[in-house]
Image (cartoon, rainbow, N blue to C red; front, side, top):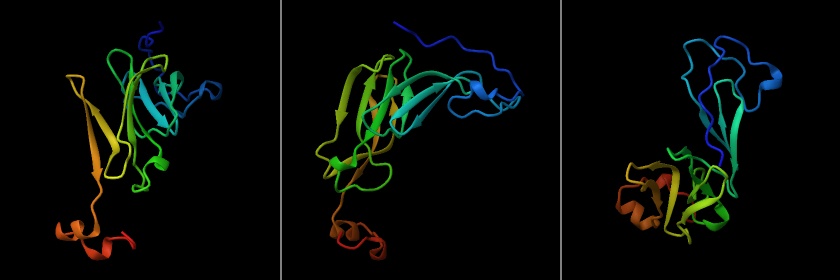
Length: 160
């Protein structure tokens, strides 16, 4: 089983050669970067890159991913969005799926809030020390419920 690679020493203050650029680092400035890796979510792809921007590892999801966390055991915790399953939540950041996959992108567990008619995970999640996952969620309210709670009427879209 492949494990995450050891930390690499960065060539600080040097331009990253064009043929070594894989995800986005163009210039590495001295005292402006932390040692280690960065996890980048780009649509359905998640990339682990080193300080020079070289792709160290990648995962691919069936859905767009807003947030992902590399766990201590090398597994990846990520959310996922598929708005066709959430017709009542057609805004940016609507996810609804959470899963953990191995380093090899094999599923460990998954959770969905389907059918997403009343609640939907939103933008981010947080791995907890006990292994649980904290999720921020939207709760859909009727126009009447929103007005009773103090929502400004001029901010409620038509037909809501």
